[in-house]
Image 1 (cartoon, one colour):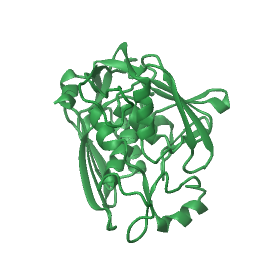
Image 2 (cartoon, one colour; image 1 turned 180 degrees about the vertical axis):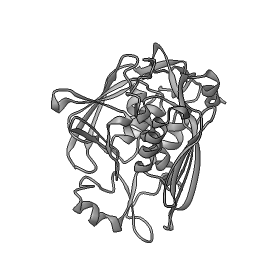
Image 3 (cartoon, rainbow, N blue to C red; image 1 turned 180 degrees about the horizontal axis):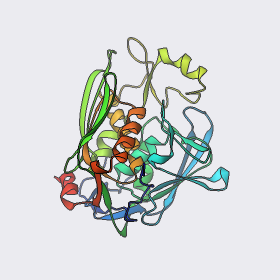
Length: 332
């Protein structure tokens, strides 16, 4: 079997649990604390929450609503404009991933899912229905911040079923020229990401991040915005892409600097957004990963290729109960 259906394993289980921490998140609503994970039980959001915005590539208005889902559901997109047609967030549903990750099931498509999935996985939400009334998720400000804020407003509820994880047993790698991404055995789930752009604001940037640290996700990753280059704009528009793009939802880079009047949120905001994309794309595995992901100049296409190659080799992975030891690494 190529992939594991979202939220399910060979044994019919998934997993997760959340333990409150004393640290308050600077981006959380007043009185709300970000929670760290013991990762023993599965979780869902406590109450429904919703937002709206424009699609980055389609420029269409989109209403998005998150609502709780039972254990072993995973992340399931629901096209409310198409009689509640369901598209599971699964590797098997990847249609294409040039400038965004697009899912498709029996001809029904949904695009730009990675930023929302990053927020759900980054904050340890295993099960959720994502209702959307158009063919693309809203881009918001180009980051995961609003989606993370939705999860924090809703709260995260523990469920009775055990959390499961996909544990990597041996190294798997895919490459394309000087671009490569690999995953190897590791006791926790970390991403070591490097980007290299010949641009004065970027150059070589590198970051290593513990994906099991939900507080760290909000503090370090979720606010990083997507970015693009002015020399690409005309070609993208000819391809009917970025029709909803603006300086409000992307960093737009000129050869010498950027068009945005507001400053970068971090000097290395670019590599932080790449880490965000990796978390969102790998959420399509349907469960947390136990492994170390190394990415060099990677993108959505390579992330999808890595997941497919990993899942095709059943000797390279196994489904296990999420060990407490792995989650405790995030509470150090």
